[in-house]
Image 1 (tube, rainbow, N blue to C red):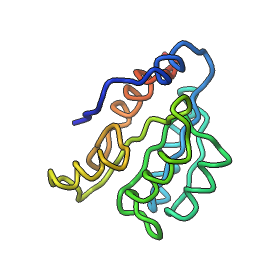
Image 2 (image 1 turned 45 degrees about the vertical axis):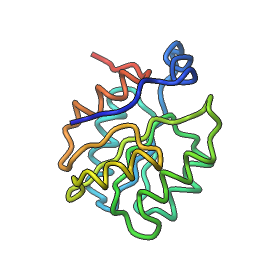
Image 3 (image 1 turned 90 degrees about the horizontal axis):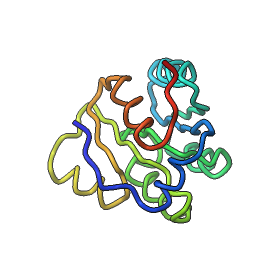
Image 4 (image 1 turned 45 degrees about the horizontal axis):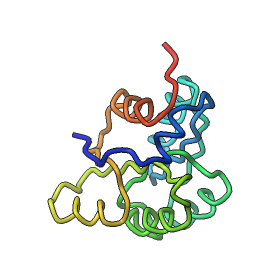
Length: 145
C-alpha cells in the first residue's frame, strides 16, 4: 500500500507541465530494471536504470530525475543512504518523487526511517506496475491510454 505526504508547492508546479517525467530506477535485479523501464517508456516516461547505490548518486546528479524508484537493499550505498543524498542534493523546486521498494522491508521502524530520509511512498515487491504508473501519473506524469 502506498502512503505519503501531500505534494509540496514545487510538485504542484511540476504537475502543470506537459513534459514527460524523467524516472530513475535503482535495483540490483537487472530483470526488474529492464522490465519496469520498458513499461514506463511505453507510457511516455524517460527512464534511466542503475543497479547499485554508488551508481545511483552520479546518475541522479546528471539525469536529474523527477521521480526515483529505489530498492532499499541495493548493494554499495543502501537505499536509505541514496534517498537521503538525493533529497539533500535537490532544491525544493526540483524535489523528486521518491518511491521505496523492498521485498523484505515492512517493519514500522523501517517505514519511519524511510520517511525520515525522504521517501514519499513505500511498495512491497513484487511491485504492481499499475500502482507505480498511478503514483507517477498523480505526481504529474502523463500516462498514454
